[in-house]
Length: 580
Image (tube, rainbow, N blue to C red):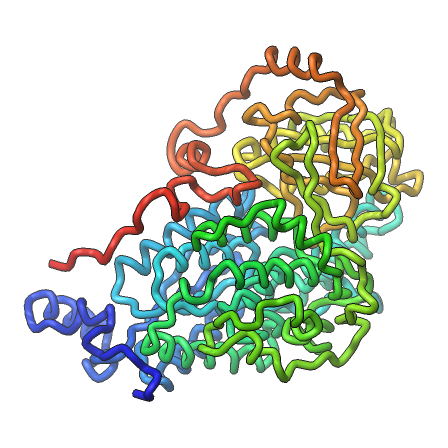
């Protein structure tokens, strides 16, 4: 051991399972022998759980079986004993109605898996949208040394000489197909070319947003979030994670020393500067509250007002994708640009400060990672709205929509369900104008159920045919981080539980005043109260099982959608399990 290693082998958490010479030891050691291990493999060594969210339906994590071996190689190099621990694989592509319904299940699983097994430290392998917050939330609560291994973005998409961005170009070309401008053959070509390798969306969607946040928070090796999934640097980073977690165990470097008020503020600033997904709001608040940090929508809006957008990466940027971002200097380069706005004294998983991690960073292309003197957008990625439609808040991405919608007033066109909305917008005879405000309700945390990504409401075909590609849209849903447009999201409280959005009617005038952060329905207060008195709650979605528990304990969007009984202030975290 080196001089900075404080723990002894006898004080390892796993020693409770393996050290005493009694019947418990016999049982545990005999089962390891059954698995083919000798005492030389694990005795007096840190036991490292490698929690992998791989599955054969999670394309974002298709490379994880190989990266698992890289991590285990690194753990062995550093003198540890690595064990693979498969975790819930919540991908946004196939998990319906949304993987957000299961984020908290993953967090619970991670916490209990760590607590109940002989693990001294963990490597968390995730990337697809909800895996990052789910893994981190559970590990923060469990409290053992942890390091996050981000899946990395996939390669750029390509079709017919055009560079494609996953998600963002899917929405764009779907509108063109609905307008009759994309043939069947072109559509099949786009389908085959938009996602060409393992890895998460290569736009600055929710996946890359959340891995960047975790990187800025100090929970990854510096800059790990930017490395493309199939780059050989990703293999080396994975092995380095394995080596580093062993040292973290000896150093007793636990997440409570890393995830602090200051590191979470750093993460929020970096998120704004990258053009983050609106989903960052929900996940970052939930992660902060797990660490006992009170982060609010108003805190995020205040940071958004003063943090310029520097990453020229779609969808908020215009030209580039995550591969370009990595070659331009990656997250370390971006953080170097805003170093004077960050608390660079924050500790990271390296055992060094954030400042030490970024001191040698450089920007190699200042059109991809802009300087403060030439931002993509003068403010950050997100803005928080309040008003009589959203007293507890709503969010919008100003940089991702046309500036003409920053001040907008028009009549509401209200839909109570996604099928109702979908049928209407495909009707070429729908009575709708570009000034209308599309509204979808009953799509929030409870109403969805699970807070699905339905918030980027399609433009009505009647308008698509006339050349319109954006309009003001409002919902209590989320939207994909790869999306763009004038979309107001996360309206809180949600309509399903009687929030003001439930009281809005088709034809009511809605006004958005983005400079003053207001969203209101222009309806007299006494009329709103009459509607409230007449409102009746919808029937429950679930009468048993996970959905029943979820519906009774999930908090609203402005509180992070964690379960009330999992937040830090609810009660003491369970101690070490009894071993008899």
